[in-house]
Image 1 (spheres, helix red, strand yellow):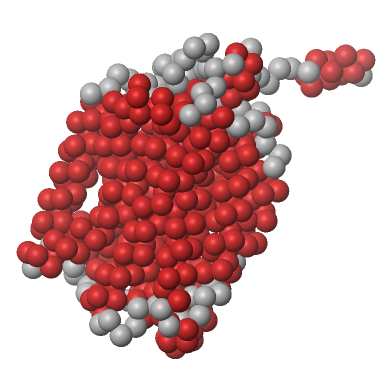
Image 2: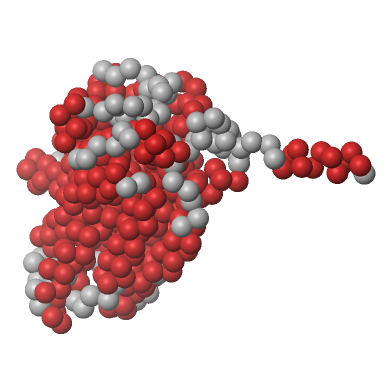
Length: 453
């Protein structure tokens, strides 16, 4: 009894942080809260962002671009989808500035509020047949707000996890923040799939709107969690030594442009795979005759596989290296590109299922897991938010935002799908080459240093 009384205070006072302020393990209370905040925030942001992507494939052409004909309506719908990706680098630059000068946490609060408001208003937009051209104009404006929001969210969520984590688990910690994206995609896809079971006229009239309106409830939950997370120890150290930059993005472009270029090309491996599979793949499969509900259900299943594979790949990257895992994913994608694109054209749910599991689950998952830590580790603390966001969000614009349009244009130009596979293979090869030009980053010291940048 006495022995228990004496040892209890010792157990409760055991340190949970290292001398540099980072967590000693991934299982401390504070680290679990950090991971939950980054995961939930990314999940909510990408729920809204990917919900738009799926709705662009199935709904928006008929609701906001009716009268253009099926092919041009789909193209116009994809164009508004791409606008969101065009806005992501802007969000990365704007919020990256505040993240590097004012702190990671404040950015995460603002981005979540922006996304929730934009998505809720989307769910209330009247169709073009009711209010005319004002409907697609408002849709584009709201999509821009979504893009700006996601552009700031990614950097904040990744850095909050990475800069709190033990050195030997940085890849794994960042992957949990990244994993929120596919989980958000699962939730968005399942929600839209559920309402797509309504009669078509009801689905097009009001059914598709409910998943967008649901985002306001998700944002409320996310804010409660996010407000309880502390600022990262590395940013606090940055403030203490007075190493913050006045305009971080200028220092990035002046002194770290090579890191931006390499990270940009590396990230294309993931974002191009995402664009081809989650947007273009769905549209191609449904257009070839596959059942929309079955396609959406398998898309959600593949997103779950992506989460599992990405976490395993990130954990492996903490031991084997970021370069090893990213290059392995690129090589796998090069081998599977043509079979995957061919399967999408079968017009069957099973053909789509195999293609999406291979392309979205395995190829995307293998590069997605370690890519967040890889990109963040290329930049010093004072410039990390701005540098990582600029590279990642620019690659998202080019890769995920425009790959559906590029793929559609290639099919129109050549009358075949093999050029799409070739395009994908070239991007993956370039990404692998860029990664191989860098030194392994898993063991670098990423703490703030006086005079860094």
